Amino acid sequence: MSRIFRAVILGPPGSGKGTISERIAQSFGLQHLSSGDFLRENIAAKTEAGVLAKTYIEKGLLVPDHVMTRLVLPRLEEITRHSWLLDGFPRTLAQAHALDIACDLDLVISLNVPFETLKERLSHRWIHPASGRVYNKGFNPPRVKGVDDITGEPLIQHEDDKPMALVARLRHYKDVAKPVIDLYKSKGILHTFSDTETDRIWPYISTLFSTKIPMHQADTHYAPSH
Ligand SMILES: Nc1ncnc2c1ncn2[C@@H]1O[C@H](COP(=O)(O)OP(=O)(O)OP(=O)(O)O)[C@@H](O)[C@H]1O
Ligand SMILES: Nc1nc2c(ncn2[C@@H]2O[C@H](COP(=O)(O)OP(=O)(O)O)[C@@H](O)[C@H]2O)c(=O)[nH]1
Image (cartoon, rainbow, N blue to C red; front, top):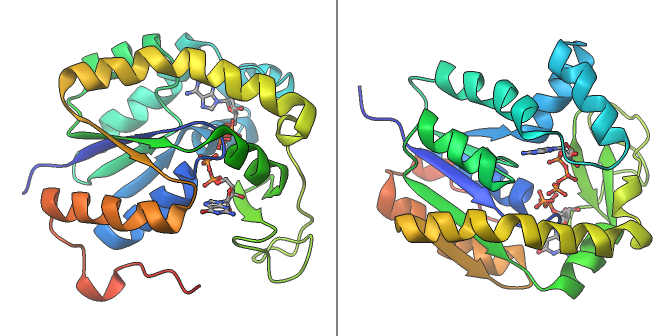
């Protein structure tokens, strides 16, 4: 059995972590693990961690580190045969230290997207709350305006994607993320990508992954259709 490959994707809200993670998963066969999805699963199943996490998320707060690590790390430890890409965790230095103890990362991607672009994107982001599927008015609109492609249920806008909350949220992200980014830089595993468009960042990320892991299947290689 070949050794599994472990990667993390970092970036502010709206920087394209979810979008790029899906492309990496499709092109290179990594499992896309998202802290938001783990939380939604736990909230739906009403687990102890899920019930607790919900009270923070509803207030627009980060879930405390000890709750997040208890939720995420066991899931990672379960995966012994599949390479993965983790999105949304670690978000704080304490989470990064906990992850460090649990496993050795091969690669960390950091997305660097200008503040104005993030504001613009997030104000046009619509989500399907039950699944976490994400749409954008211009970039990837739903097939029918206002409804989820798969279930036909209505899309909503996150309270904290609305303009008033956005600026504070992006500032807060920067403060909390800086020491995490510095940690991975000091370990020599950080790769930073800066641009205003996911489609311009993607070829560089794709090349980086191609050098690190064999292509999953050449014919599943992701190519944007627009
Ligand atoms: N690693 C984490 N640490 C603390 N709280 C987290 C973490 N990951 C997710 N959360 C909580 O869950 C909520 C939903 O997370 P999710 O990543 O789906 O969406 P988000 O905050 O809109 O992120 P982004 O905009 O970067 O996609 C967050 O707003 C936060 O309250
Ligand atoms: N206009 C535009 N929107 C994008 C681009 N990349 C992603 N998006 C959209 O921007 C929003 C944030 O992207 P997402 O992948 O959810 O970012 P995350 O918050 O970092 O996970 C979503 O609505 C995406 O569809 C891009 O290059 N241009």
